[in-house]
Image 1 (tube, rainbow, N blue to C red):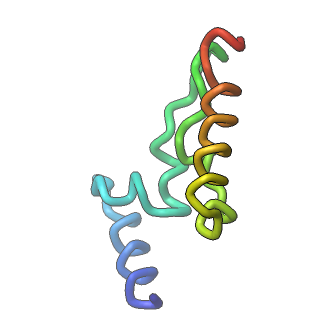
Image 2: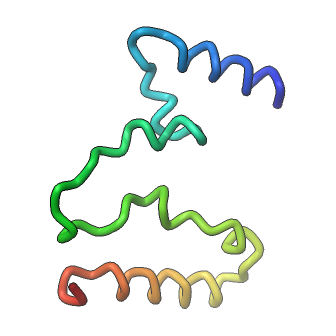
Length: 76
């Protein structure tokens, strides 16, 4: 894991940022555009929840439905 962290630090220091950093925390935040309007849903990275890794299938479906409903355009 330390090797990966060191590698991503080197990549992050490059003049042109490699695309892999878009999905690598904590570097992904730098790639999220600043929105001038709040009519857009949250970026998917904001929806990450470590608890989902331990949920069973039914619990996960329920959580997904909850998130989908709270982020639908008709709710805004």
